[in-house]
Length: 244
Image (cartoon, rainbow, N blue to C red; front, side, top):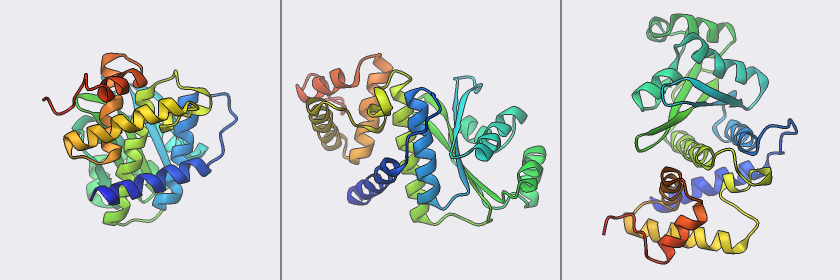
């Protein structure tokens, strides 16, 4: 199980690395999110992928998407106040809509569903971005074909959602080109320290290497401390994640 999770992370990070950097002057974290969106389109056979970063009360902070058309789709649901992304944020659970022309979807989100079908979008899959009690936003996949996700595709989508969470947790102060937002840094010492801490947390909690990094970043975010300082505490055995 851990091996399969690691394989999904390797595939996702490889696809992200292949995406060119947007030359739009946006902050590093948004550039990183843009690359993640475009990589997710390829990995998940989606028509478009949008990420909405929200405040605690559900107000929209900013939107990043794989392309301009998808940006408008992602933004529309929060403008209207209805859609799977809104529900996923509120319920803290994925909302997978296999056919937006179905009576159930139309009855649930009448305005939004009609707007999507007008734009030839037939399915939408929304994933909440959250770590513990902290809700960060949602990632939504838009597809021109109706239908359910396969189990493998769903697992890969959840992996992309985890990578998005890590990137958002790193905040707007990332290094140039968003390197730290994707788990990398120019300093080999930084990388080695974080990687060692990941391995220790993985053993302590019995989770995947990706989940271990999310726990590490979430702790740093909650404590308002740099990631490498928290990693050093783990390596020096000053901090454990299993409560012992």
